[in-house]
Length: 637
View 1 (cartoon, rainbow, N blue to C red):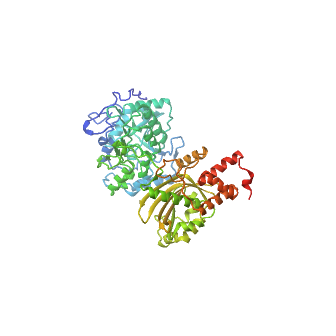
View 2 (cartoon, rainbow, N blue to C red):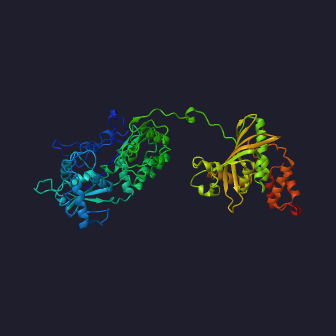
């Protein structure tokens, strides 16, 4: 008969605050006492949510090492799923079982390490085990359970989905050690009518559990008694063994759908949750825990110990949480750090910088720079950073000329921009989008990747001619000057360090992909101007936000400002045009003529109108061309 659901509101009288000395947030306890003869009151087994008083953990200290499986009869059936497709073992399979049984230690085994063959058996541990009691319909449920618990003591178990079908009584358990102990009970317990109690064990999959409104209501009732109002904490440890659920449901949180269902209910009922205990739920896939950072912004304490977490990077799923306490002990991942405690703490704190307590161990207070805690604000971003107005003027004029020639069809004039002994190198980023940068891959001089000294030397372009020759072979480009940023990090009498970032598109390819670039120039005075002595170029795919911002600008046809504003102008306003050499003006006009098909005379007029801002000149041509206001003679050559 199913037990009536426990009716209790959230944080009602069903939950206890527990002993204050335990220092735990999950103080709920619904234990049932035994009689003097060792039997239990009622049908509810002892269940506790206090970490240091865990029943199964305590029973495992003196666990009986009786692992003999010789009581397996030839007629024992083993099922591989929860449906009716169970089958008898063949003769060869029975022989395999007997061989495995014979290899197990005797009843007197008290050793420390598990024998190799037992490890192999453990590696194939199924999801759960079905315990069948032939002729169990003759006896009361409590009578059967109390006899089994007394015989396997100090082992204990929680019977799940106990039912009587025909002449048989059956229930499920989820522990391999208990299953082995129950196998040993077969024909060992004498019952009231003088017969021996028969026990059959089969391996099963999950019993089917349909998630409907009725089940959700039962889940709410089960979680209500596990919620501690005083500490705003919810204890979901060993949730599939909850006494209010096991009579009618097998609801393991190791199933992602079931975990999601529970977390959705919790977010609806207690969105301000501060502590959550998910210990001993056999969690292996943590993807559904990504909702913790989205729905539980105040969550500071998380217990996920005694689960099946194998890799430390699985914690990245909820690294957005600002946790102060985390319990991870009892997971396979912890054994990897058995002799590297400092690395363990470091790797966990990389995900949770504010963590103060890990696995019941106090951590030193983290050293972090938290602007929000100091009440300060980050300075607003700027398109340029420079403290020297004279350096800005030089860099502005130099780079404007450089990129104008770089985007033209002929980059040979850049020979005058490089020193005789200039050096040049290029790198790209390694990521999932590396294949999109395949054209640059062969010349990538990433010193973390390139270890061979000869190859490093070969990829470094040295001398004016090799540098310009390499640049001339790069794809034809068009830079978006309004996306540029500039920093002048160092200024001396003999050199300047300039860093420029921005976006450009490649014109050689049909799809004309957009790239992000970062160029660092070291320039120095030479003759009447400045020359590049060293340049490092880095190319990457742009971020989604960069592309979105660029597309917005193009859609609204915002005319680009001068690439690098002067110190006296606010951001977004064009700078006063620099006096360009006559040969540079001719080159600009020639480039515009090639792009627009206008003759050289009209190209010069167009650039003069926009004060030699090439982007503005090209935009003006496109606008007037759409209106049909450009005369025919502009195209006569």
